[in-house]
Image: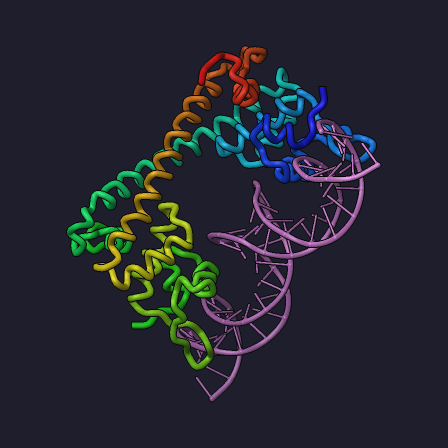
Length: 138
Length: 138
DNA sequence: CCTACATCCTCTAGCGACTAGAGGTTCAAG
DNA sequence: CTTGAACCTCTAGTCGCTAGAGGATGTAGG
């Protein structure tokens, strides 16, 4: 079983130039090639690229993924480290969620502005107000 | 009242090079200068920069902020447009929150892996599984 | 008035993580 | 054997900053 870069792209939902980029930065191993130098991939590459894509979607930086991937080669000994990376990331994610939720509430309040009553629109004001202590909160 | 770029930086919580960058890309108007070409800012700049910073923190792209700023000059007529930009952004944010929450659940499950039982650690697996529907979850 | 030195200036280059395009080659179907 | 989609390498661009070089300015203390 061998896949072209385009087929791999479709199966792993990662764009072709991005696959080549991942290879370039050493996230993805250099695949075998045809006589004419075209890349051919196997099932392992699909899995690995799925792993990468998913980790990226989850917000892991490439460097973290690189660590995870290298640790994955020896999962039994390295599990503790994987655990640590993941834990650190979890904290980050929780923080992101908290800030985005605050943001959503704010945006919702902003959008709630009925734009038939144009003069009352507060979006600009809300954005401008922050950090200015207009209502004497420090 | 006139502020140096450093004072503006402190008041608006935006780094000095970033302020100059914002000026360069036209987000911030060119300020007045001293004889020796140093920038001097006023209260309006503090407000505008606070607006920009806040909008950035909320995840608005520079282009969107540029629109908001230009619309802000005529808030009565433009409120509908401001509304639209914000609404579009809200949709995005809601989507991000949903995906991050799914991620958090996953990470939490991953971290719950007791690393004394090393062989059972599923972190790598969980990341690799996605898009492969091994456990027939959506 | 002079000196010290923090802060300012402009400029170029770099970062991460891609994305786009030019210009040419390969491969599989008809 | 021809066609044309997909492949190849390469360079350069994107966004939103950030860092550094190398020099000028402005202000506070003596």
